[in-house]
Image (tube, rainbow, N blue to C red; front, side):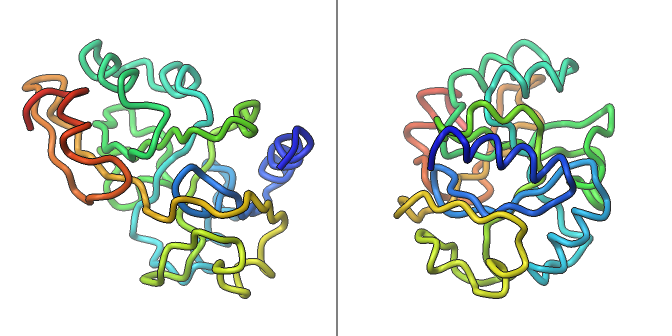
Length: 201
């Protein structure tokens, strides 16, 4: 990857395209989070049911916090301790932001902020999912991304071999009010490390 890859990513997404890219865990597939045609293409390429939600990804935490001003101070502080990194968080979504990502659960928003230094200049939020067919293995190398997805994407970025463990999914929907959190899917970040950031589950 290079500095030009970041610009190419931004241009492709802005034009309604799909990008295969290296995150900090596994290879992902991304598009403009607010472009319904691009989102439909992404779901069709993955063979993913449209009613299943996806995460919105920002490449810098401050951009995510700016885009979600309704988040309370306790939640914002927790996010600043966990992100960027290999965690996806479920947040309350009272303003019904990014409805294409929330799908049939508009009151919840999945947020992801990976640590991908060379994509830090990408300013646009994207809807993202792992670059696999629904139910398939998470790809750690570009060659493991299904050929159908690589051929169907408008831009493919090779970041070499990745760790290969998907992000840990943490439910923070009650965190602001009660300080409680739940691991929905184990992954790249362990519960002990999360506990150091969030306190007891």
